[in-house]
Image (cartoon, rainbow, N blue to C red):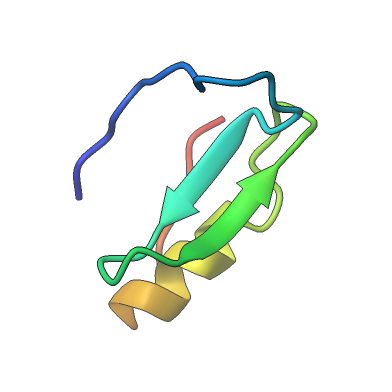
Length: 53
């Protein structure tokens, strides 16, 4: 997995995105939290994933 920090070209309300290898958004967050991120990662990797917050 690669972690990339970026700033959008245009204003956005999203504080986090998880992009699948095929380019689709698997998870998005607008509250600067990680709710649902572990589930999204687990669905992509097919392995249990823990997320440190």
